[in-house]
Length: 463
Ligand SMILES: [Zn+2]
Image: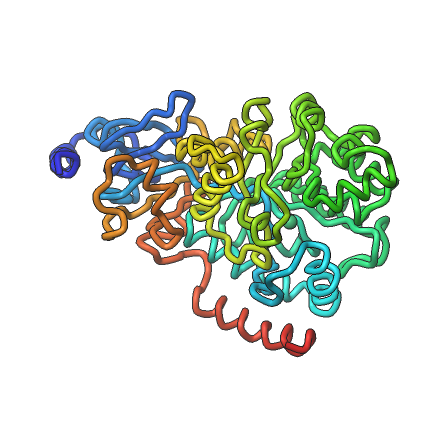
């Protein structure tokens, strides 16, 4: 209640100073609420305010102080809300929302080889990728994700849709050994990836990348070629690695090494590589990843659903590996809600180590914000609310019975918040959703298009 009164008084002060001359004109003010900055000192302002001009955060401070200094063209009222940096989903396959619930309750190899790869061979098209990405973007905007890292096909379609939706993304064109939906042979995929990277290289929202699917779907030559392509063009390289015990067994049989050590032996790892999963790693593997500056994406929900295992999160963090959090594609999760991913990251770590202090709420929030930014090599731009960084900000309503009372906002973000509690989503200083009204996509049309295409998927796979 005290907080509310302070916020109300600040609001009154804001009105009182509205007529003062000499205030700097900015594009946006986010006013009131508890601002969780996620900066180096984990500063929390309650109540707080954020001034944004163009794409960047200009100042973070007390509401009355900022109201006295800035005049904004638009204001977001965040009273009774928690304000935090937009969430960073470090691993997904956005268009796979079109396969949500198509094949559940299977192990990774069965799921991939008997269901997902065949369904993709029959149904992936530029249209499905476009429609799926719109649906995924809608879900991400509505649940507070502002940046996502993607690995899929027709990545140029995903890039165009991402820019249209206003989200930020690292998008990796997938390379596999077998005929892919958008290329017959790896060389063709590589040529596609090169064209894609050059086309989107200077985009303000999209970072183009190349994505060899995994060790078990690529030979040595194409793994080396993708790493070289990434290095030559200064682009990130995304891969799945050490996801299952089977993958480790095969790598040991074929190369007498773990997947991580094999990728090291061919010069694959570097500071711009991001490995997803990294469950079955040895202490030596973790040292390799740390030494090479590799980002690792932890995907607790996908890993639990496919019974792949539990990544050694605590060991990664102790070793100083840049660790982020991801949902994986919606076909193995089955949603893109990063709040749920935070909660499950915390629970899975506690369960797997039988240590209730493993991955506390603050650590889970770090993984989903500044940790993800570090894993993607974007920590100077995003991951916290600080002057000079891009204004990627979300507000979360905290008035539901389930959220009452609130002693600790960080605890609430991780342990009781759902994606649906997000009220406002801002990316690059642009409001994509305000009071749950998405401005960049036509919600009704996106859902109708997805349902229409799903009927074709159903026919194609005989469901
Ligand atoms: Zn994946």
